[in-house]
Structures are given as C-alpha cells and as structure tokens.
Amino acid sequence: MFQSIQQSYVKSLQLLTPLDGLAPLLLRLILAPVLIQAGWNKFSHFSDTVAWFGNSDWGLGLPLPALLASLAIAAELLGGVLLLLGLFTRLVAIPLLVTMLVAIFAVHLPNGWPAISDSSSWLADGTILLNERVMASSDKIAAARGLLQQHGNYDWLSASGRLVILNNGIEFAALYFAMLLSLLFSGAGRYVSADYWLQHCLSSAATQSDAPKQRV
Image 1 (spheres, rainbow, N blue to C red):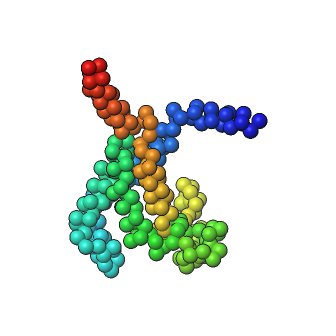
Image 2: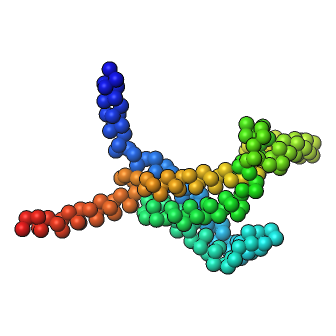
Image 3: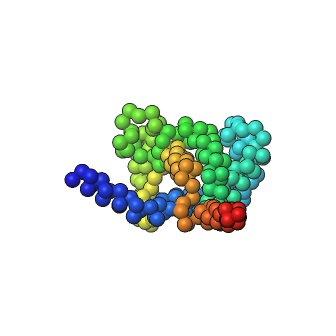
C-alpha cells in the first residue's frame, strides 16, 4: 500500500513539472513593478536621493552618495525590467540582493519588523522585532480617529481603507530579499522567461554544431 501511495505521489509531481515555471514567474511579476517604481522614484528626485544617501544627520551617511545612488537606481530600474523579461535573472538577483541588505540594515532595521504599526500583533508580546513606536501606535490612531471624527469627514477619509501608522520596518525588504534569493537558486522559470529560451537556442545550436563531428 505504501509503495502504491509513493508511486501516485511521484506521478503527481511529474504532472506538475511542466508548470514549475509558474512560481518564479509570479515572483518576478511581483518584484518587477516594485523595483521599477522604486528606481524611478529615486531617479525622478535624483538630487534628493543623493542628499539622503550622503547626509549623516537625517539620511544614510554613505560615502560617494552620487555614485551609490546611481548604482541603486540602475540596479532597481534595469534589474526590474530584466526580471520582468526573465533575462539574466540569476545575475540580476545578486546586486538586487545587495540593495535589499543595504535597505534592511541601513534603513529599516532600527524600526523592527512590521511595515505597518500594529500593537495588537502576536509579535508584540515581548519580541525584539517591535519597538516603542509600534506599541504606542494604537493610542495615536485612536487620537487621530477622534480628531477626524470631530473635525473632519471621517467616513470619506476612511472610505478607501482604515487609518494606519507607517512603521517602515524590515518586513517588505526581508520578503523581497527572500523572493530574490529564491530566484537566484531557481532561475526565471521554464517556458516563461527569456533565459529559458536563450538557453534552449544555445543548446540547440551546440547540438547542431556537434552533429557533423559525430557522423565523421
């Protein structure tokens, strides 16, 4: 019985094999617009980006801010486009992984884990991933709601979604890092990427060039 179950399981996996490119495709489709938008925002406000990279009081305090800002923009804009196409995916993932690490440790880590402040989160109970700002957010949200309900059109203001306080923790950057790391190991995916068809063409060309030698 166990052998029969095992054989059925193996056959099921074999049926999924032609579809194994869907997972990296979804990762690429999620990451590409986020990266392109981030790169475009930096590019369209280049002087502000350079100032933020270089200023040690309210920015990152990095050396050579113009160069590093340009590299970050190139990685995000060009990298996002190449991810969308699935071209040179493993190679592109490397500078993007570095970019995410810089974002995590230089920007988001002091704010803990959550991107959005939520003191009711199960992580809030004695974890180092949250900070005092997150724990105090519920009182601030309650005060903001009270002011808006008293002095503003609260129903209109909250019609698009509930009011939240941005915490800017490592949550999104860590998720993007994990997705890029997955693409580094898996590649862009079968059938749905330029990498696959480029490799397919190169393999076909190599086979055809070797064919005459095999007949000699």
